[in-house]
Length: 83
Image 1 (cartoon, rainbow, N blue to C red):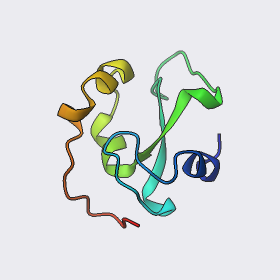
Image 2: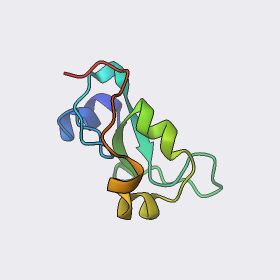
Image 3: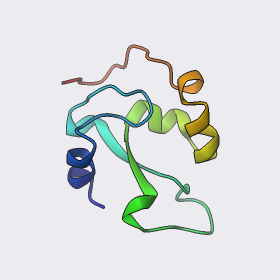
Image 4: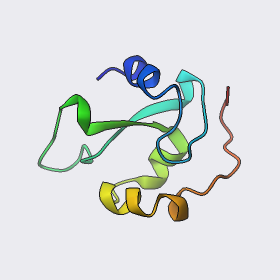
């Protein structure tokens, strides 16, 4: 799924920190990291993430991060352009 479509679907809100950002500060976060052997290219394999949260997650397991979202991705001051 293209970034713009994903941003519209999630209303420009980061899946991890729940803050709203401009399109230029958002990225697709793949549930299965791109450097894994198994790559899932389905549209359902991506969530919208700000660049800070996407970098913070790195290659951590998606389900672990999802279950510990409040602990791992506390609201903090992003140095990005919020809406």
